[in-house]
Amino acid sequence: MTKLPHSLRLKDMHKGRKILIVEDEAADAILLKRAFSKLSPDLQIDVAEDGGDALDVLIARNQTEVSDISFPTFVLLDLKLRRLDGHEVLKRLKENDQ
Image (tube, rainbow, N blue to C red; front, side):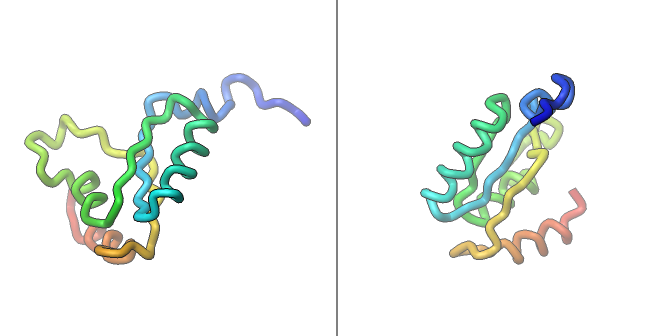
């Protein structure tokens, strides 16, 4: 198996990057967080337990200065959430200019 050059290794490409996992099953969220952490220990990984929490992060509600917010680089969104499902989250994101 050929090793990637150091400059192309995934762990180095994601320094300072942020992932948002939107998952209402705690066990699944833990497994995903563990997998991403092993893949690249430098990733900042946040978990939102439902669509409402995800929108709080992604639309920056309850924030005073949008410029101070570090938005995620990647969002892993469960479509079948209990309260506000993933389809509704996507719909609201498309409707938001921010």
